[in-house]
Length: 277
Image (cartoon, rainbow, N blue to C red):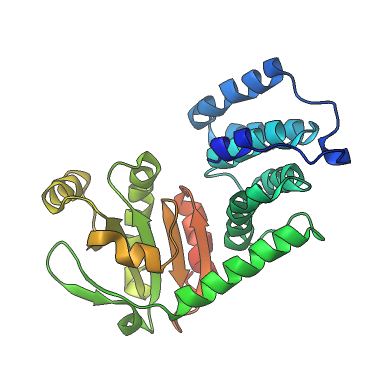
């Protein structure tokens, strides 16, 4: 979420993008009120609701108001199909275009969504192009990065020693509800594909080892969980929000990554991009 960022921003003086009609406080409140209830809907109804909200927000003007709503919708749009994510991304891109320079972090959030989901939005926006370039540079650093961490049983795992395998890195921590929500899907995929060369490594940052062992036992997590004390690996892989999932193919190429919770079907699609079916 970037509510504070947008709330502090202001539209460029005289910019046509920031001209009326602005959403009323009643309209903003109505959309804000709808967002928390999206998680209670079935998959098909949630996807439809997210798409309708994206189109409704897109009809507004005003950098701050439209941007807040678009960012919040992005945060609430986990587990929706890519075509719906594309609508949210387009709305977010339109909200950002023409806004002041302090919105650069929001552009990075959008760029990570676009690259991770293999969708596009707002061609011709130089600030989005710059953000995409920065994300691409980060991805090259990630592909070249390595680590050695021990799992909760004391076994060491070195990323580059896993060439020949498809690797899914799952950055998470116990106090993150969307992270916990993903565990059954990851467990099911691990059971389905481990015989075909899938390795899932969950990287937990700064969790207490004793509490983490108890948590993993209670949730029956079957894949290795690595403790990243001090978050050095988390930082090296440019993780700024969790859950963050990265998939590397058998040659070590980063083929997919997403921020936010995903369903088993969406994870399977990510693995498919690495050649695992």
